Length: 76
Image (cartoon, rainbow, N blue to C red; front, top):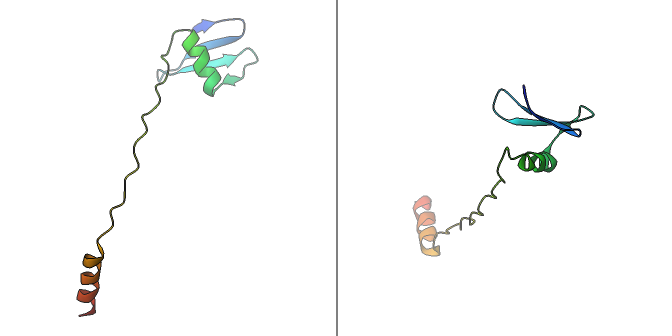
């Protein structure tokens, strides 16, 4: 791991896979929103964009006539 930035409160490291890790001064790893906030303030990442909401697919039901024909054919 390569040290990118060190402050009195935390250390930012770059891992071999290219992602960043943030370690607090107590040697505890910082995760989630706090980590994103620290990396954005350091200028290492951009703000994550929320995914657009996809419309829910509407289930199409077969008309009653087609269902009745299918039942008649099964009976024969």
